[in-house]
Length: 288
Ligand code: PAF
Image (cartoon, rainbow, N blue to C red; front, side, top):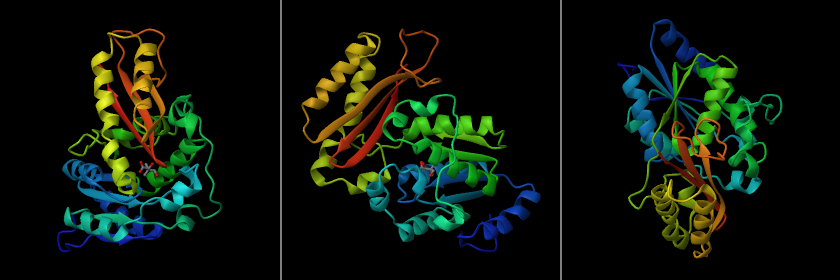
């Protein structure tokens, strides 16, 4: 983008970010945005590459948002690899890296605003991570208002988050297109996640079972009832002492609710959350 400079711009202040982006917006440049919490992997980079293909300028943010963590230990231990993140982004030609401090994003108090996402926030992750989506909504809204991207990109590993951000944009009439992108997986099927680096060797070896079970559940979908399928999944995880199933849910992609009956016109997805030791992993798969 900045043809006379090869170096990505690294900024931590909202005012600096605005000063860089405003003239580009005025010049009619399309701005693509990839919000992240850092510890970047190929999944994140694929979002950046997509954003580059579709936009003139790409902004990536790295901010470990304290208000979306319901567990302080998870927040403290969340991997922080800024130097490596910066190097990777520079290498693929990202234009702007925004790395704000907590005080920059939360100048008054470090707390989440309250959102009504029409019930999407009470399903699955919402049942197990109190206040999580208020935290996500708060930070993503602030980032959108700051970056004012034309399009923002999110991975579908966090499918519920993706749906909630679409809802946020609709409810607040934010002028940004929200694009969901496919899940990136390791060669053994484990969904890429910044948390994977914290797995012990034994838990890392056990973790590919999560996607294997999702794929088997997909095959069985339509042959077994939702209840039978859920029980079957629960039984499989009881056989693996290293993995502790938190939930397996089949839900309608639109409402994120488990249907009483399968409708041929609706789209369904299986969602799963599993503890591998104290690391919580989530994944999902489209069923039809
Ligand atoms: O998916 C994430 O990494 C985070 O939830 C997000 C969207 C960057 C908000 O902090």
